[in-house]
Image 1 (cartoon, rainbow, N blue to C red):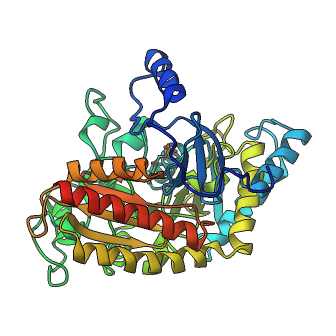
Image 2 (cartoon, protein in one colour):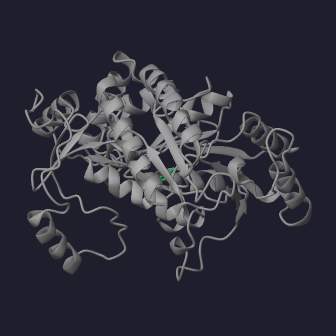
Length: 451
Ligand SMILES: Cc1ncc(COP(=O)(O)O)c(C=O)c1O
């Protein structure tokens, strides 16, 4: 659908959510679908355009979460659809693991150009974020011949065994799945608002980095460590942003011990944070970058592991997957990267993000249940508390706000125990963004009055 349909001009809630059609589908879903999904809101989608999604009962929502951080180019982006359709009509599948096609090469060339570092790079194409992480984990173990890896408390890297073993955002991701992939040590993430060492930044002497150094003296021999995997801004834990010195300090540790630095940019990458990759905020160059989510704009599953050629030196057969880097996903991803550049969406995310953050800061000052607002580019978060000062998790308050925004026709997503994430498509208009933030403010005010 090339032009904006009439319904996609603003949020519109016509009745209860879920409405009768949605309720019927949810009932069927509950009978046959795996109960392991974390279905958080009863929205049953029917069609989408731009920043809007219409449900099966005709309710229209402004999606301030980009279909869970995937739809950076919006729903039904005509350019991506055209690229995918042309590919589908030409050739749907060819065994990219055993033969060749040009779009894999072109996508890899583009990814090596936009990722930090001017050294030669190679790319592994996967089907998802978790698979991109698996490839990074296997690659650093293979390259270094070292078994251990350092990850962080609050990290989320996916749900396959390797990715899950590197994750620690919620204990239920691990419950009853033990034994996990061995050799992972979790370090505290620099979550300054809730510092585990009860320090305040600045003036904290970076006890979180000191802790890693202490660990290396007492628990893990540094020469057994292959690398560190980190989300430069922790995503699922609620957009936690490290202080400016932190990532450069990690880079130093890596250089000191010959460790590989893996940046999981699956949520932060491709312009979302106002830079092409979030590590660029701190001038840090990792050996490996993982991307997925927004890469093909939601047209077809894809993930990518982009590594220094020196590091991605494994032998043929060491790693591959039938559908990784499939033709349709590659066509959409290439078109998406062109769009990102031509429409200057990274710059747009930065500018719109700065404006949104100052709007949110007013909420932080004025509304007692808003503990902290933070963000870079169009990845912004509001952390809720019971009341200012005590910092007790405002989980109930956050959940009530999500419900209240939904009733007003906007979708926001949870993050961590008490945060709400704001991550609209990068193509959002100023007017739509203002609408979304106004809905949020009204919802927060309503909940603050009730609590
Ligand atoms: C930072 C990060 N890494 C990895 C993943 C896993 O990606 P996928 O769900 O595509 O496997 C996610 C998904 O939320 C993520 O946010």
